[in-house]
Image (cartoon, rainbow, N blue to C red; front, side, top):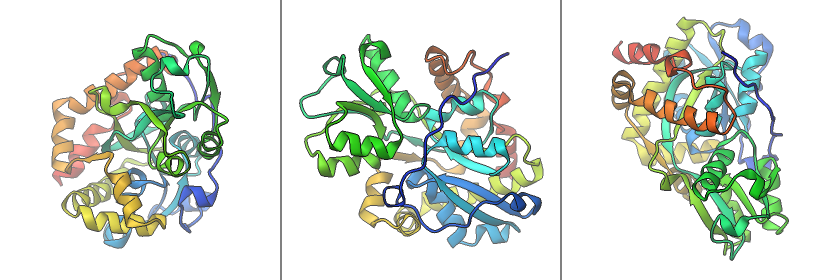
Length: 327
């Protein structure tokens, strides 16, 4: 069955906006060391918190692994790096879940449920109808694109009703702040950056309003050995439970890793629902995780990002996840 490939790559954010940290560069030689894990992430609470915990708590070392981490500004670029052999693992939000569904990567662990995505408008633009015929920026292929299309469909509109402009996230921040675009399909914590310059910003639509689950996930390249996957999944599970049990300490560690204030990290975390590994393993076994992924897949088919909606077990290694938890 045919699948669609990545159609757009988004350029990296400037360091100041990315809130990134100094990280070890990922090199091709790293893949030759079976004990080295080259891990991509996005510079927010969802993408960075487990990596911050695993490093600080010595979880990689206890597993006999060394992690080299590198920041990216979105999931699609990480999946490209996985496909090119420049990364072993990465992090994606729900808006990029169509990529593993298209055979470009394997989901090895569900991370959180996130509700950070919004359609925003300039002051006075309070509905999708208000954006009709206007310029709306979006980083295509991401969760910003996802929430925009959900909101359009709910309003009985399509992308033909707006002037949709593909932009990287840093450009959306500057373009919205300067009034060059009327709206955007975007996400927190970057929206907080815009709010400082446009305090009257309107939140027109939110993933919170849909009633659906929007999982974030960690993904692996399709050629990563199963033995390494099992070790990495176990570390992610240990870090996940530490995060669940130590929410305030996790905010501190994540803020330090991202070089932001604890208030910023806490605001970011407020859009996130964490689950224990026990809960995630149970939801994997019961088929609930599959339902989350199938619902997203149906959306991606309607949005023409996928030609068909595959069974989640084609790209989510749920058996590996539950087996790692039972050990």
